[in-house]
Length: 79
Ligand SMILES: [Zn+2]
Image (tube, rainbow, N blue to C red; front, side, top):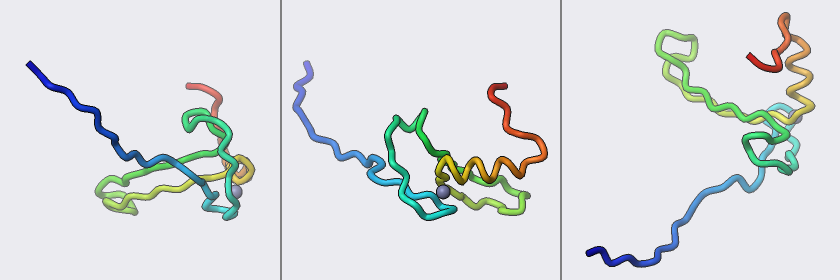
């Protein structure tokens, strides 16, 4: 037999997001998975230029557009 009790768990959620490139606060209006900004969490592998480092940043949709316009090959809509 198991006796259960109610507990309250603390959870960290994104309260505010700032664009790392322009510094502006991004208005979070959509859920994270389909939001209006790009969120990157990258752990670099050993042997890469950033050997073992972890980087994370967020970009607003405007800065994202400016960066991808410099790509020789534009991002694809789907794979
Ligand atoms: Zn920006």
